[in-house]
Amino acid sequence: MSIEYTPGPLLDAARSTPTALWNDSADPNELRQSISFGGVGATCNPTIAYTCINQRKDVWLPRIAELAEEMPEASESEIGWQVVREMSIEAAGLLEPIFEEHKGRNGRLSMQTDPRLARSAKALADQAEEFSGLAKNIIVKIPATSVGVKAIEDATYRGVSINVTVSFSVAQAVTTGEAIERGLKRREAEGLDTSTMGPVVTLMGGRLDDWIKIVAKRDELFIDPGHLEWAGVAALKRAYQEFQSRGLRARVLSAAFRNVMHWSELVGGDLVVSPPFAWQEIINKSGYKVTNRIDVPVAPEIMKTLLSIPEFVRAYEPDGMTPEEFDSFGATRRTLRGFLEADQDLDTLVRNVIMPQP
View (tube, rainbow, N blue to C red):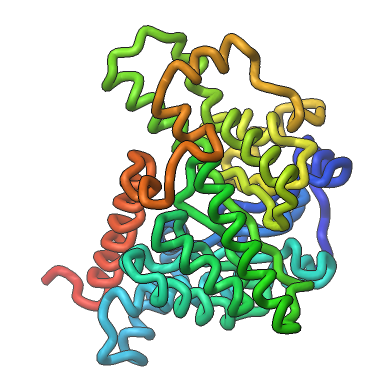
């Protein structure tokens, strides 16, 4: 694939720093443009699939009808997930040359395990292994829950490159990063190859921002609201420091963008940023001069505000929560519920194709 690169801050960061850009969508048109910005990865899940179908109804609605004919006993969910598979394979093909160039570290397409399997570590690991086999450059998302931690280690041991998701805290990032490390070491102890595996650990900074704002409103806290925009950035910087000091091989990934700081404050780190394409366009048109800021601490007055909120302290400290507490963390429950609702939306879309209203 011949790439015509688009000048701008994103390309500058991609060329002058180790910070990798991944696109938070599997839409092929957006992905091609993101690659021109220096993008080297992408993601797909039921929410993204639902959006992509609506953006390309001429392609995907007829395909859903065909799948219903090809799979006469399949449920709406099974047909919807087959669409997710096909979208992911298409996007993975666009990224394959980058995968080869980067020897597995980048050039990957993220697929998300079905959130309805979240109570079973074996079911999550089994589906992760299946998804990993769809294309050589697939990376699979498993949630950072108490069950997910077990599935992450097991799937890594099986040779699956993992992208940890539903993760909002330093404790979740460190715990899952260590689970990946255990899986890698188990493979290596048996003489199994890990050289082309490229695991990442997502910290959904914007969703942490969202949750801390909800907590501040709920608890009627009298604080500077602008300081709350920094919660995710502070956690991402702390997680990155912990990964470096602990020698964890997985990279931190910044996702769930709410402001440009979820990119600009992390530039310079050997990590991944995964903004939606709309944010990439904003950044690339900005004229921003790329500056390495990963090691620049969040201002003391902002940290003083954030550390006065017990729920932020839980998210910020590496031992702020146990794996069992991950499950009841507000951001975890909100996000898992959102993913389950996205599955239902995809089911409804399929239903409207195969059984339209009379």
